[in-house]
Image 1 (cartoon, one colour):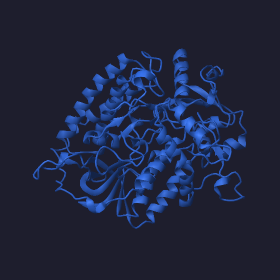
Image 2 (cartoon, one colour; image 1 turned 60 degrees about the vertical axis):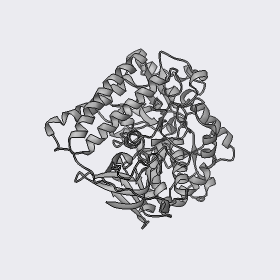
Image 3 (cartoon, rainbow, N blue to C red; image 1 turned 30 degrees about the horizontal axis):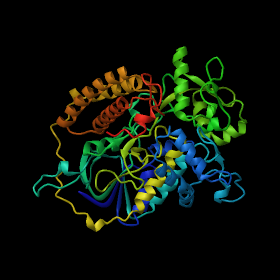
Image 4 (cartoon, rainbow, N blue to C red; image 1 turned 90 degrees about the vertical axis):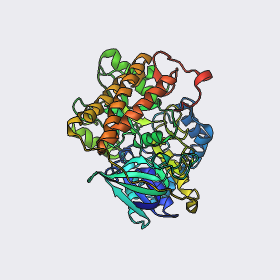
Amino acid sequence: MKDFDFLVIGSGIAGLVYAIESSKQGTVAVISKKSLYECNTDYAQGGIAAVLDAHDSFEEHIHDTYIAGAELGKKEVIKQIISEGPALIKYLVEMGTDFTRRDENYDRSMENLSLTREGGHSRNRVAYAADSTGHQIMEALIRNCKNNSNITVFENHMAVDLITQHHIPQTEGFIPGITCWGAYVMDNSTNQIDIFRAKKTMLATGGASCIYSHNTNSEIATGDGMAMARLAGARLANMEFVQFHPTAFYHAESKTFLISEALRGEGAILRLQDGSEFMGNYHPMGNLAPRDIVSQAIDAELKKRGDKYCYLDATNVDKEILRNHFPFINKKCLEYGVDFTKEPIPVAPAAHYFCGGILSTINGITDIRNLFAAGEVACTGLHGANRLASNSLLEALVIAYHAGQQPSNLKDVSFPPIPEWRDQGQFNENEWVVISHNREIIGTIMQGYVGIRRSRRLLKYALSRMENIYTEINNFYQHNTVRKEVVETRNMAVISTMVIRSALTRKESRGAHCVIDYPDRDDKNYKSDTII
């Protein structure tokens, strides 16, 4: 048994900010499934949105967020998160984040931050560090964590299950409500599972876009936190709103990578394979329309023509701006023989971000006592039905900071006797195909039947298939010693089922949920969260 005051599961911006703030009140363990850098934060290219310019206003950012979210976001949550954005970007700067400046030789003040614009924004308000913003933030936060004697990092460890009443022998009578006392955590190098006992547990495990075969996420984004919380009894909200990023690099034989929306903010244009523009036919903001609209437009045009990709043409943008602002994209495209200063980039939409997640408050509080959630794993009400570009890092930062600032009341937490993890049987290599085969099938089903545009007939077919897949995986999980891939595939099946069930519940099209049976919005019946 390992004892800590705080347990943080996940090592992106939400997890590390919470760890840093909580360390002021007690000892902290940070669980990272792979290395600290292997997370969606590190993959984030575009930046972090906040009102940092004298010509901008909180009211405009709030309005843009609410409209991009198809008017489903919670206005009070939106207002609070956005109003705290500037102060917390200053917090990141003080931590050592090296954002790009207007004039690198001038000064390091907040007023000198270079700002760009992305889809859905009415102003330039996205602070960035070239096209590797997330990596720069991670560099600063990791440095601060490693220099903090109250924080212990466990890399290559994976949380298997939250410790709640479900694991406790009921020898002392009924314990009212569900309480979390930490987690069972596996060392991926040895497959040994230990008890990480903690008075407060933070889920900061990110999203679950790896349930789709074509996605922009780190390979660790298998919905672990959402699934563990759901299995423990927490509610999930708005799981049908899976945002597809419009512009992921397309290659028939290779893993895709993100092409930042900031490229369109600098003037890049979406074109079909015949060279024609098309976004003006779909939205007044054209190439800078909100992500759901751009993704749906590309999907419609590709299916109309039978094409697999379109082009993002940045050849009209100054070459020095392209090379200086987008060095990562430049390098990655050149690896595939594409010079984006001279020729267009082949792109197609890919699963990117979960607007839904564990139902939680602005302080990170969930249904389960002493369990918190922050970042993409959580659903606070900021994004509504579709995330405004670069609001994700902002939300993770604000919620994690809020949660870490809450009085810990550590003395009020006591522990019941927690049993050691009990492995079932031996690992059956002959039945391993149940996991490997079904993991691939999950991605195929979600990509084909629960993608950008959906039909109720295919959703019902997908639900039937997914429930059978979950049964197969869970049977394997219950009768074999645990491995990382088994837990991940179980979690993927749980979350896939939640997405499909939520999609069937919402009989309208809104934001990232587009269903051809109900093409219009229905504010009378569905202007509310979908709760599972």
